[in-house]
Image (cartoon, rainbow, N blue to C red):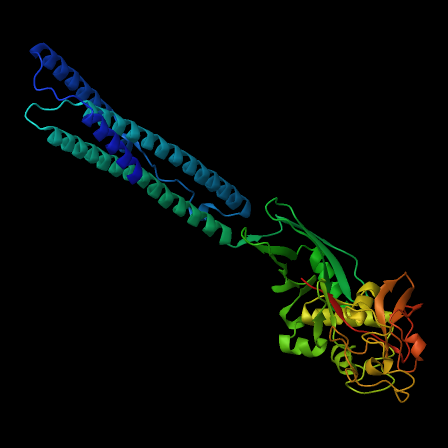
Length: 462
């Protein structure tokens, strides 16, 4: 702006300096010039009086529904959409107002500056005085222009204050907790599985502003399950969802109106507070889990021990007893019941690894003959070094991921198989070395259990 002003001033000085100095002119000519000057001054004044940019600006207060008027998540979403559109409209209209104001200010300044440049020299002032007066007048006009431009920019501050108020309103609606009941959530109870002691349940939303499609589990003993089913069909069990528009996470529960109990969703299981154990107790039940680099799952650092099995199931089926020994003599079906009970207690979704996950974890990022090494004695208990029995977990060297006993000790069930047969991986404490290679696998019936069959946990990361 300063550079532009200086350029204008230099131009004016040069123009004035090039003008001839006339001491006197005929009276008729002087009168004509005075009339022309007066006419220009009137035009400028007319332009100034017409220029009412700031008085014309009318920023009306925003009318929004009261907080109590927004009772549902759908109405909140509509209000947020309306406020967002209003913000965009205000931004666009204010920028147009500012651009129009700046344009009018510049036009007014140009007219004033031209009038100053064309004003004649007074007969009683020297050339130097004449030049100085014109420079002072132009600088005064420039200061007025800059002051008016600053006022025009003040429009933006006014609008920003209004927009901030709208954003605060949107934030309050976005963060408010909305409770959706049976009128917004549809629920279906499936057939009870007596073997796994659980109901399947399906929930889905009937409102477009909450996306919900859930297949969950309600773990219950047979006696409680019978009553629960009666209460469900009597309409006493109601779904409840707590949602916030600004968060993707939903809080889901099934509310039993008959006894005022709540089953809250943890993972994919609906549990009462009494079903859950503390984080410290859960850690003892589970042991350490190792996340696999660049993958979406974690896997147990060791095979599930007899102590862990006993804590969940209340009994120990192992042939060779010892708290820190891997649990043995468990079938694939036994493991499924164990996982169901473990997940009830922890509220998380533990499972068996797939064969592909198990193999990936076994190699530890580098293909070797055995899990973690080409030297079998470094990583595995097998027929040549076990002494004829399973050994405590984590007594040999871990692989690169920090996993123990992927080779040897007990064979490990994985998730893969068909309807009747499942896969055991890794070889056992009595196996010869050739049966302990990393790619060794055997299929057995799901009910197969022997003193070489164990497992380790896996879990998909959230």
